[in-house]
Amino acid sequence: MSTIIDETCLDNMQSLLGDQFTDTLEFCLTEFERLESEVRMTIDSDLEAATRNAHSLKSNAAQFGAMSLSDVAREIEMALLANEVDKAKAQIDNLTDQVVSSKSKLQQWLTSSV
Image 1 (cartoon, rainbow, N blue to C red):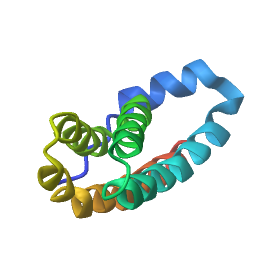
Image 2 (cartoon, helix red, strand yellow):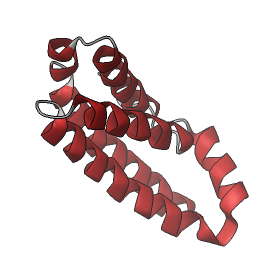
Image 3 (cartoon, one colour):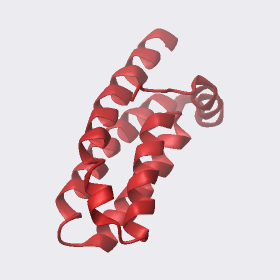
């Protein structure tokens, strides 16, 4: 799966947050990793927590334009809500890949836009 970043979302968030944008984006990138790790750690033991973390990752990623990451997190969230745990687990490696590639693209965008 390719990594899709919607730069319009970034531009909108930058306009909304002003001087706080860079710090907020950097925090969000850290949250992507934390939430992905939480999904991975809880998917076998606490489906409610795994679902909640997938939902948060989906929302945070979408706000900052990481659309492909948001899509994978949504697939995991929906699978868990449908109690299709094996389907959700099948997407975990894809989720990790999307976190890594989305972070890289967002950091590149940040460097080129400042």
